[in-house]
Image (cartoon, rainbow, N blue to C red):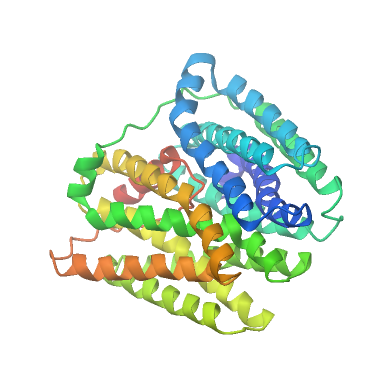
Length: 408
């Protein structure tokens, strides 16, 4: 690991600053939108727009990188993000914010792909898995740290928009000034969706459902908090707890998944999440209990995402794993577009607890479908190819991590 940090610290430091800048953005817009008088449904469009841009960026960014190179794409998208972050408070209009969020999602998608290809290509075969695991841990730590910043300045002013803009600008200094040359970009192909569904119906359906869970959870958590009457400090703690749960429970669940039928684990975790969401929906929980809910929800959602990828890979030869991961991540991103929209509609219809109700319904669906699939065929031989991966990682990084896991 020390060797990895020696070679990759500029990239990892840059990614950390990027995630602090990106992590504060979603929470802050939910809080500020409430101050500006946006409706819950209007804010759901704002949050959903990011995932539209992210999905489009995952398709367009590799073409841009091949045409003009990593460094130019990196610098151009980074400059655009810095500008977007300071434009939000200048034009407090939900339609303008939605358009800006599409651009932000597109830019961050391209930046992640560039950074991950850089790390993937500069690491050796012996250190690649460690380097990409460190990258994903840094992503989570950056987002957790971003929630602390919400408690420093007043969210009704300009400072909280300027701070992430500066952090994003600074993030490119260690990356672009690093002595490591930019790598040759190697994009990841996809399996056809029909073939992918034939290989793993649970993997495909599960990724669509968890996309909705993920985007509702992280896109609308601050909107729910503001509507439920939480203050800025409490909202930041709640959102931070979602990521802490994902960081802490990822590896214990992964350890179990390599020693049992992954479908059983997916079903069990989904059922637990559904029950937790049921309690949060119908009981007036104190804030301490809400933090426990957040830790469990984040701690289940991130591992289930990785479990679905690993389960699909159990049916595949190693050379097809990266392509399958690309298709699954696309399905997850497509499902993510609709999560905030439906959550916003439910919160408008039944009140703030529609946030938990929607996530609970999705987990009921996933648990039921996993149980159904267990009745349709026997469990595959477990490859051991579970690795902790985040929803923000591109197909390039996920494919490389799982390829390394399959070899080990």
